[in-house]
Amino acid sequence: MHPKQLHIRDYTYYLPDEQIARYPLAERDASRLLIYHHGAIQEDQYLNIDRYLPPQSLLIVNNTRVVEARLLFQKPTGAVVEIFCLEPPAIYSDMTMAMSQKGRVVWTCLIGGASKWKPGQVLEKRIPYEASEIVLQARYQGKEKDSFAIELQWTPGTLSFAEILHYAGAIPLPPYIKRTVEASDAERYQTVYAHTEGSVAAPTAGLHFSERVFEKLDQKTIRREQVTLHVGAGTFKPVKSETMEGHEMHAEFIDVRRETVQAIIDYLNKPITVVGTTSLRTVESLYWLGVKALRGEELVVNQWDAYELEGDVPVREALEALAVRERIITRTSLLIAPGYTMRVANALVTNFHQPQSTLLLLVAAFVGNDWRNIYEYALKNNFRFLSYGDGCLLIRSQ
Image (cartoon, rainbow, N blue to C red; front, side, top):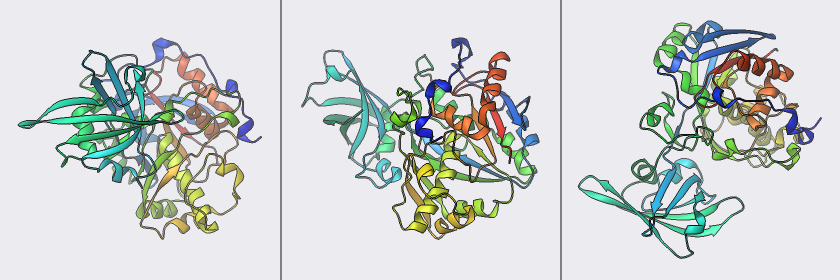
């Protein structure tokens, strides 16, 4: 069956509100870990994940960093308008370029309280900065399908947009964490290896990893490589259509160095574990980008490419077609759903995801119908769900 015909109602379960984690645990690596392998389930904690990963294998993580994407502007009347900075428009070639803009930027945003913002009205926000202040202005440029184009200008013009968000914005917690942002979220809603700014949501599977976990992995000579996928708010976009054909998958920036592509090639005959659905989508997108490179096509991965392109190109051959490039910077809309054949990853570390979500479809594609047994076990044994919750290591049958 083509994934277009999948009914989202077949990928649901009942998630009690009390099992949604509102806060992280005091220690990152104290979270519970469900291990699934060959149909069997066992439990441990993330501190001991090294016990379940083979020595001399490859671990791939997503090094994206969450930006303070929520900007609150107060009008003279007291009304508050929230601008949620989603992603840069196509005029910027990549996220790094967009985040480094100085003095002015155009951004694709969601607007809370849009009815309070009259056309032509300039919103202004002042923030103390060193011995002076930052003056940030927002101008409405136009309405798009599900968002708005907003022009942001600021002084001092020597500051980058990334710096402006840091001083003027707030971390955007997922909508299902129903509480206000607290100071601790600035650290705990980032992975310890977060580096490249651009996400509006954390790659949450990585939140459980600590320096002492990495020390134990090093002792087993497990190699670590980093990719970048900037997580967009579309990761929380509910599937509202009856079948997946009616759902538009969100596009996200990826950035991968040639050395990482070569490392994947070198480990194709060894176990490769990816941390998070974002890392999985990135490494699997690399295969399809290689297929397109061999075909002389534009290096962008569209939603249905994996199901409509010729997919019998050997993985090594596809990746070697990319390894000649210094960096691969592009967008991917790859939908991984039942019917998809994994090309790169053997094991997936991930959290427990929302019912009827594209992330749950990805898990079902990875482990098959056993996803139901995994989630039933987690629910019955009081695992904590979603971004700040517990997680699992899913080892795929070859």
